[in-house]
Image (cartoon, rainbow, N blue to C red; front, side, top):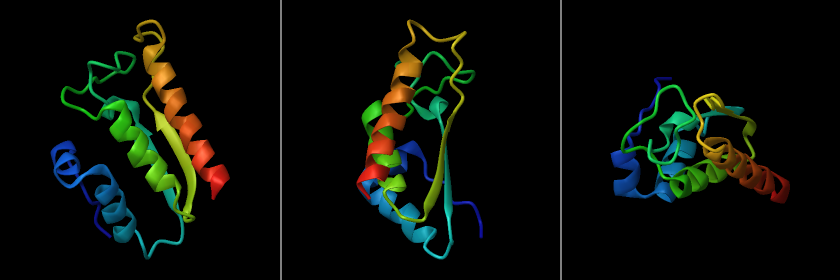
Amino acid sequence: MEIKVITVEELREQGVNKTVNIVLDYLKNCDSIYVSFDIDSLDDSIVKGTGTPEPHGLSEGEAMVLITGLVSDEKVNCLELTEVNPILDEKNKTAEIAFRIVNESVKCIENN
């Protein structure tokens, strides 16, 4: 299976919920899904606490819908959130965003 790449622009054009459906459909033949989310995919205006800040990246809301949508699938057996660097963070903002994403994801998993 090839790795499917969906750009931020594509995600925004088709919408986050449709993107979630496209990803899960692409992975439908997998027995289990491991989700790894790099915090540096968020826009550099909201996350400074990462090694590779990304201009024009995802908003916190887009990331929240994307990740919670993915972990709602029963095949997802792992979620990791990476690239948070507290040394580069400003007033713990990146860590707080990461916590909110993980917290909402856990709520989704508990509700399934």
